[in-house]
Length: 255
Image 1 (cartoon, rainbow, N blue to C red):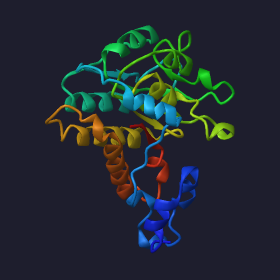
Image 2: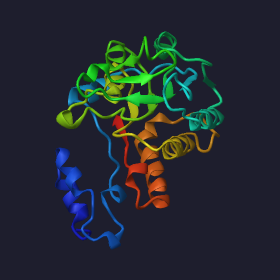
Image 3: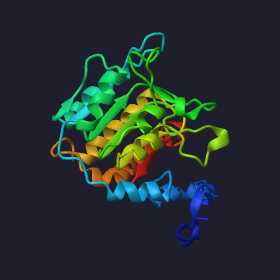
Image 4: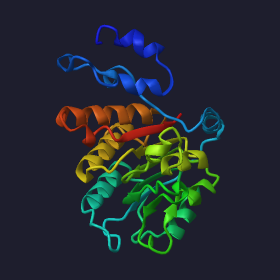
């Protein structure tokens, strides 16, 4: 497999590439992840639309962190994650008690948004898949809410569980939060395909932004999102080689 991987990877199209993700000889330590950088798109039209969008003018980064939503398990690592991201991106804003209306109002004026909270994929009603802000019991932030927006953002990082999951019956569809943010106008969206380990997910996010900002020495270069995520995933893989659930969940959707 390893001998044939490079020419084979160039010839495989569509979702068949996923079938080649694991090497037949694990000792070779070279898989598709070592050879290609993956990006996804809901549709070719959506990708063309994202590429044609005029990028938003410079603006602050919005950091939405919900470590203690009512009646949900606490996420203590969310606070550390938000503080680490803010340290790498000094020009950022972090609402103290984010609720749905505040986030929807802020999105048009923040070209880069980082959301760290609980997420829920509703497989029976994908339009109801949601992010759990402080008022999620009465006003969840749903796929339907995001899909109705028309934005010109450059990056949305959805650091929550199941934000790129449409369920087992709709694996080929983009009826999830990641797809909704992309279709709404964000050129790049980072999401997760299943429930993620909180500490590992925070590491992915922090390493991602560390690469985009050269360790906090420059504004985020969102033209490098796919590569930045790739680097973060490979780093986590090197630390947890036998636990792919820690590093294989994250995907890049967009340009």
